[in-house]
Each structure stands twice: as C-alpha cells, then as structure tokens.
Image 1 (spheres, rainbow, N blue to C red):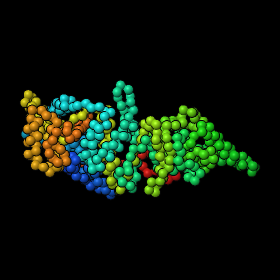
Image 2: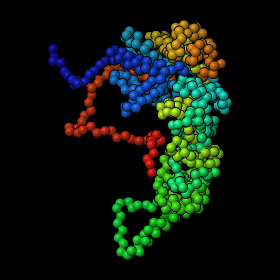
Image 3: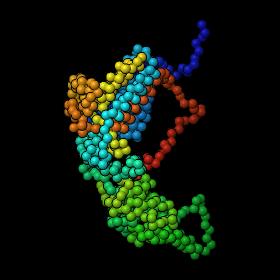
Image 4: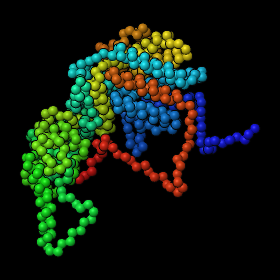
Length: 560
C-alpha cells in the first residue's frame, strides 16, 4: 500500500456527495421555514437584531434575508443565492420575494426523495427546467390583460400586493400613494412603452410625528433644507422662477497654498475688492434672469447671500445632487454648471409654489403644485421610526407593482390560484413525459402547491381539507380563478374578491425559485475553512465601503 497522500490541508473540511445535498436541502428548508409564516395577509412579523444592534421588525422576505446571519455554509450560500435571486426579484419586479423562498425551499424538499434514490442532480434540474417552461406557458394562458388607465383595477391590484404586508390595515392609503407616485413619474417612451424609474425620481421622505393619514404624494419635491438667510429671504413664493446651479457662489480658493505678498496697504483693499467684484459678477449674471429662487449644490458665501437677498431672491445651498435632479425634473429647470452659461430656457417655471415649512423641529422646503412634474416626493408621517421604515418597505413593493402593471398590463389570479392551476396542468402533462425525468417533473408540479398550502396554514384553517377541496376544483385545469381568501381561509373566486397578482411578478417568482433550487442541487462538494493568504505581519485592514450615488439619499445631511 502507498502511504496516504495529503492533498487538502488539515484545517480544511471537505464534504462531498449526497451528504452535501442533504445539508443544502436542510439549510434551505430552515430558511424557508423562517420566512414561510410571512406569506399572505395573515402574516406574522419577524424581529431581527442587525449587526449594529438595531432592531428591525418586518415581514418583507427580502429585508429578512438581508438581516439574517447564517452559520451553515449551505444556508449562507442559500441566502446568498436566494438573496441574489431575491435581489433580482426585488429589482426586476419588487414583489414576490417571500414566495420565491417558500417555493425554492419546497422544490428542494421534494428533490430530497430523489437524491436518496440516487437520481443524478442534473436529471432533477432538467425536469425542473422543463416544468418551469410549461409553468410559464400556463401563466400565459390564464393571464388577462387590463387597462392601465382604469384606476379601480390598479387599486385592487396594488392592494392585493400590500394586503400581505403590515400596512394592509391602512387599506387604500398606501395603494393610493403608490399609484399616484408611479403615474406621476412615468415617462412615455413611445410605442406604448412606459418607463418608470422609482429609484431615481421618487423620493420617500420619512418624517416622524403625525399620523399615517397625513401622508401624501406631493406634486413636486421637498427636501430638508431652509433658505440661507431666514430673516431676509422670502419663505413663500408663488410661481417661482427657479435656477439650479451646480457651482459654488463664493470666491475660489487657490488650489495649493498660494502666498500673495503685498507691498502697499492699498493693494490689500484692491485684492479684497477683486474678490467682491468676482462674486458680484456671478450674482449679476444670475439676477439677469430675474429668478425668485436660486439653488446650488455647492457653497454660497455671505456676500453672494447679501446680493441675492437685496434683489429679493431666496437661496438654498449645499443640496444633494439627487435632490437637485429631482427638482429639475419637477419644475422643468436645467442644472447649470457655470453661472455665465445661463440661458432663459434653463429657468424652471413649472412650479406653482415654493414654501419653507416647519415640520416637527426641522425645516423642509417644498416646491409643489408643479404643472407636469416628472419627479415627486412621497411624504410619510407616522408615530414611530419602526413604523415608518416598515411603511417605506411596503411602499417600495407597492410602487414596484404599480410600475410592473404600467409596463406589462397583464394579471394572473392571486391567493394561490395560479400555483394550483399550474400544478394541475403540470400533473396532467407529467403522464406524457417519458423516461426518468417524469418523476421529478411531477414532484415539481406538487411543489407549486406550497404557496396555497402556506396561505392556508397562515390563516389557521384545516389545511388538508382546504387543499383537497382546492385540488378537486382545479383537477382538470379548469376554473383557474379559484383560490384561498387569505384573510378568512375560505375558498373563493379570486375574480370577485379582486385578489390579483401581476403577471411578470409571478413569472419572475417561478423563474427565480426554480433557478435557485437547481443551483443548490448542483452543488456536490463543500470545502470550508479556507483562509485568505496574508503577508506575514499584516493586520486585517477593514474593507473600505464604496458608496454609490443611490446610497446618497439614505444619508444624513451634514449640517452646513
């Protein structure tokens, strides 16, 4: 016998083969179990302690996965896979994150039996992908188109999306906000396409205090700033002419340490005078256009402030770039980089009112009553910070749903009806599939029932009875609209109860879930305990955080 050869280091653990599959499946079932109870209108909330010791209370699948800290590598991979899956889910369609996890967990659960029987994972994956294609084609069959401009239908749809969320109890309020906001920002691309950019042009301002009922969508924008000289500048201007700058209105300092040597005392006065004249020049170039409001992203010196207030112009300085973009969209101004390039066309005249209001103990500037705003702010009021955060998460989902419908106006039934129909059709189809792939295909069909089953569980009705009744109703793929009313657990017609889902949310949910499941099934080896190679003596350097422009919104504004 040869002496054993060490290939892997001692410190490495290597698991391979079916052991890994079982571990993966267990891990993903565990994650799915955590999230399972958050599906449907009768959902529970989860309380999570995040890394910094803060508490998050939510039932948004995406938020939970982001906060969970998992020990098992597969669970970690699972949450990474699913969270990358869910991130696509969240970014593509914005809703259905919970369903993805539940579905993927169920898909893996039914695959376990085949792995025990020594089926090859690729066979299972092939069957699953076939099932996915057929599922999507069933969706196409049962989807129905709607008219985007019919507000009542839209409302029903968005409501069924937030019905499953914490804010469901505030009924139409959030749905209204979401629809208003998305219909304001929608831009027609021609050919009947509409582009709605939620991230960029809808800003959610959370202001603690007041009640939720005070929330609203502004026909314009608001931001957390006051005018530069509160006593001297107007705080309320009707039909303001707005100029947006991206340049400082102050004297430029020298690049590096500049020394000016002055021989005579008078030269000092000349130097100061030059600085003053420079600023006066800048201000005159701006005042030529008779603005009422000047907003700059950079600084604004006392002197410039004086010239502007003398001319009766209000000024706001150091505004965030993202906010400035929104103001430009809302009132039709153009952001100018150098005051000497200003043209009449750059002045924004679309706004009806500029006003600074005090909410709580902070000042907020409002630019509202715009003629045809292409950006807006959703003002959320609420008793506590936690409540506001949760409402904001729900609002994001609701806006995404509204955006999806505007982009692709097709509906499928909610309440588990779609999944049951898909399941029934796949079961029928599975009998015509030949060879070894038939069984996993059928299992995938059964796995789709996880969603209605979970809905029934969360309502606390007799699950087996309800499921049997539903399966009976769906047996031949007919009455596709029968599902579970998530509030009472009764079997009902989803058309009458107005419980809908957006077509592309459903399609994306199925795709993401099955792809995540296949990916986890394909893993057959886990090598853990790999240390990063480090040069001797080097300590661990913290990883620098890279900020993107999208983060800029969430940040606290530094005081001037």
